[in-house]
Image (cartoon, rainbow, N blue to C red):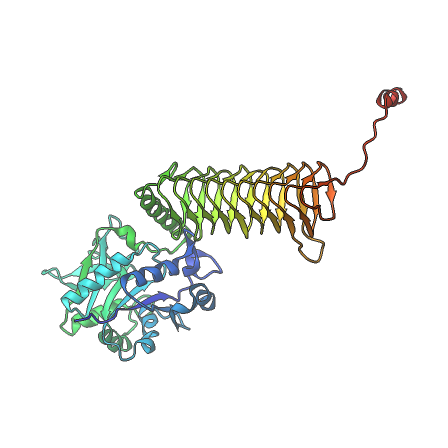
Length: 461
């Protein structure tokens, strides 16, 4: 028999006062992704097809960040977690299966943990199952209070905790699996008889116990998985923890990480085996690094694709595509729209933007190539500049195969340099140069014999 589909609610309406930010708390990034997006991903991995995100402060920005694959319930007044969950009721009208509820500020939450919680809930046919962990210092968290048989009786929040309860180390991590009918039947009955004057979701558990049913607890051994973020220091700790998790996954897949304390790799980055990631390197977005590549040190790569056995060091790449055995750096800047085919070399202080460089071509030093096509085997000399902008519009430069662009050349676009053409060093080229022709555009040199000696003689006091 096929299991009932799994629903999910993410509570992300809070302002996050302790973050001291104009940005909604759930939108603060951890390893390059908004916290709430990481929770959405965990929900999907657990089997929730379309999570319901409860939004409030910064809600429109959150909708824009998460896109159309979620449903959104507005919590206009911040009246607590129970009230927030109630806002999702309209999306689950008539649904009678299990529903996961999780906070939007738990970026380390995993699909595996949520799947385990939902699985235990289904197995036990519970009204509610909550996740718990034990902490050496449980200050600030709601305590799990059990009876003599070990069954949950209630959860007491820190601000409402009395002596004896404060010593309990088992805490509620605010991740639940409810029977949907039970949840939405009891939510409207909640009171707000607590120090905050809010409707607590935990009071649903108390109501279940009061009715004579059992609210179950699934105890987890990895507190880090449920780490919540309430301030900037906890945000930094979460970022560090997720970064280590990502680095470990790549290392165990055959990638060498030279200095894990200084390397940052985003959740959507893929890296082939035998790649080496050097110190101080950041790989972000949907970057793909091929097998045998060496990236870094001190390199930033965003949303780029590197083929096999590339070398990229002390450089910046953004939305670039590299073939195999490409060498970039040091101090190169590849801006969006760059395609470097196999065995291309882009060297020190070279900037490339919206350009294609053909197989085996090289721009080894101090050049700018913008809106340019460079054919295979062409050499671009030091100091070459493509003048692609006339103050109103961008224009293209087309350079053929096996051409030679002499040092300190200025190519004024729009312009075409043919296959095998040679541009003399120091030229300013404003017209097309045919294949195998010489382009020369500089003032004629004059040599005046003995002029320097005479000048120095005239300058003597």
